[in-house]
Amino acid sequence: MLRFMVEQGADVTTVCTSKVTNMEDLFFNTEFNQDISSWDVSNVTNMQTLFLASLFDQDISAWDITNVTNMGSMFTASPFNQDISAWDVSHVEDMNQMFSFTQFNQDISTWDVSNVTNMFGMFSFSTFDQNIEDWDVSSVRDMYGMFSNSKFNQDISDWDTGNVYNMDEMFRDSQFNQDISSWNVNNVTQCELFSDNTPNWTLPKPNFTNCDPN
Image (spheres, rainbow, N blue to C red):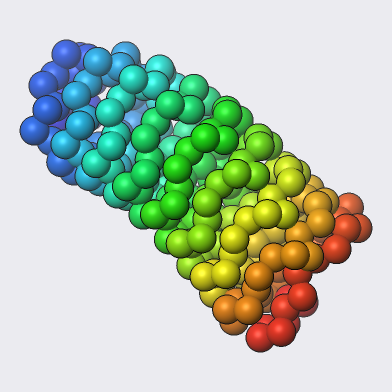
């Protein structure tokens, strides 16, 4: 019903959403850009592709997303660039492509991402370039293309990457140039084209022993 209302261009600013648990694809490929800051999303667990390819760019900083576990492609290919620094993402497990193909460039340095296992393409093809050096990525397994074709160039040398197995194309075609030689890549078995076409990257890189980064 809610998706139908969105497709019809109805006013959904005051719709009761307190019992909704799944918002996957709700605004996918729509021109939706209404003020939904007052929505109660406290029971939502799935926000995958919520705003994918939409025109949404409104303040949702006050949303209670405590129970959300999936944010895959949540803002992909949308103009969203709002402050969501206060979000409690501590239960999120999937952030794959969350900000890919976006202009999002806000401070999310204090996010608790300790339960995230999938960061596949999270910032690929994005303008994101903020400090996330204190992120706890110790649970992440997949970092395929995480910063590929992005402008990201921040110090993440202290990241705990000991559980990551996939770093294929992680920084391919990016502007990254930081020393990450201290990274633990002992469990990485996929690192093809890890830093392909990164002519500006002159600082030391990880020492892969279980895969070929070229």
